[in-house]
Image 1 (cartoon, rainbow, N blue to C red):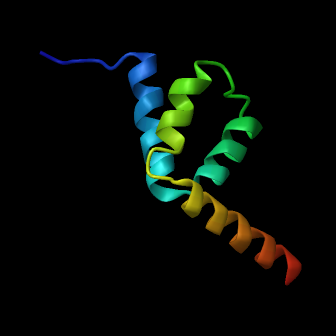
Image 2: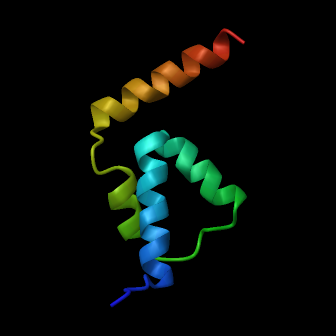
Length: 71
């Protein structure tokens, strides 16, 4: 029997692919550009920042700021 994924399952799979290949901030920008802001932010936040800590996010902010100063 063929099992067809529903829309939510397809969106979840797409999100997982994006997160596996892009930085969380890039995924957020992509979402905003595609107007994909509907849904439960609290669940999305948990997925986006699951592997992050305050220290890791702080390091990324510093790296981002430093890269922008060089431009």
